[in-house]
Image (cartoon, rainbow, N blue to C red; front, side, top):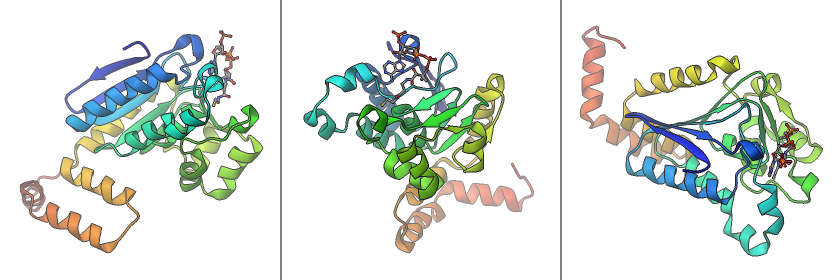
Length: 242
Ligand code: COA
């Protein structure tokens, strides 16, 4: 892959955005390669960790490419469809954000289930400054993550959220020194792997749905019949707890 470094492990895939000449800006090649990663994770469900190389998460969509795009390309939802696909991956996704996560880079992080940040992390959506809107999820995902007031400060007033802001507003789970960021993200993924994989998968599906008691009951019905539930509960009742 030319824009990503991808490490495929048994229980997780680690993706590092790597376009040092453009602060990891998301171009068409990167979109294609991220789709390839999504396809691999859909085929063989694993956790996903996304980070950026060189002290930047991603400085947005590639502005050189954006400049040449017109209505047809906007309607194709080039980034929004990728981020929706990413958000719907079967198992949890984590973004480890060091440095700038701007524009589409921020939207990529918003599409993940959990975000961790280094003290240098900066989230922002400067799209209106370029005469466009943040159309790959920021207008609604950011609002879901931090509420309308903060989201509108970011979207309408160009406010950048530093790591402290991001922690205070709940956008990131934790701020850890850059040198510990990946290790902490892996520890978080380790914790996730200790859960039942099907339970994790169905919890994500139900939590991301629009909420209905019926879906909760149906998902629980599947889990109540699973061998894994019996094994895990027997282990608990037998005194062995993980
Ligand atoms: N698209 C294309 N190229 C980008 C880019 C983007 N989104 N962001 C950075 N680059 C390129 C710069 O053009 C520059 O290229 P050059 O060396 O050929 O001139 C290189 O990456 C380094 O960027 P530079 O601005 O010199 O780095 P910096 O450390 O001073 O600033 C940022 C970093 C992220 C603050 C700044 O690059 C920036 O504001 N980028 C655009 C952010 C943005 O508006 N994103 C929304 C896009 S929808």
